[in-house]
Picture 1: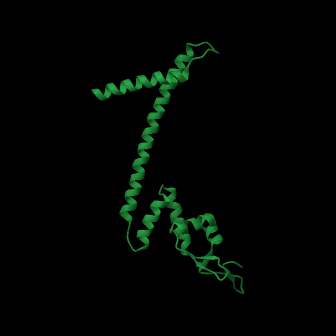
Picture 2 (picture 1 turned 120 degrees about the vertical axis):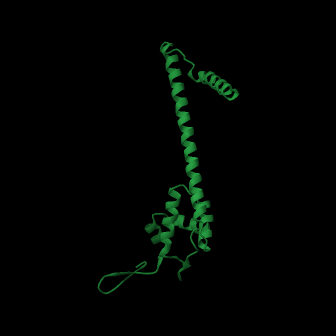
Picture 3 (picture 1 turned 180 degrees about the vertical axis):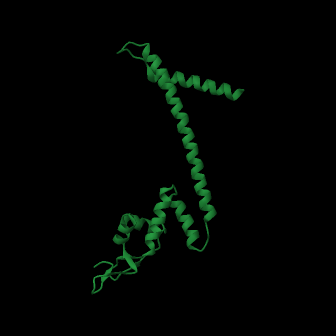
Length: 165
């Protein structure tokens, strides 16, 4: 009956090991994901049963949850491999983890700034296109895409003048 041993009164006693399918269900990942984590050494190689099933200790569920939560906040598998290797060998990679997350936040701030700049640029383009379309009869070409080249030339010229002053 899997990893459960039933007593006479019907209560359930859990065994100390989980098969990969059980760990996968408990952790919300696939068995393939568990094997991938194993290959990367994020999870220690499990024991094997007599019929060669993988048998994970119950603590493996906590480890998989930790990995999933770290991935959810932006850590990569490669970063986790490095951090957990230090941790598993008795080290305390707390400052490294803090630095990595700080870098992720800085990168996110930069991406947001870039997106805001792009949004402003798109608004300028749409305003220019609205003016162009107002002066063109329906069905006549307004050459909107060609106007991007002119807008880019003006933008580069303005940026160059700003850098010179």
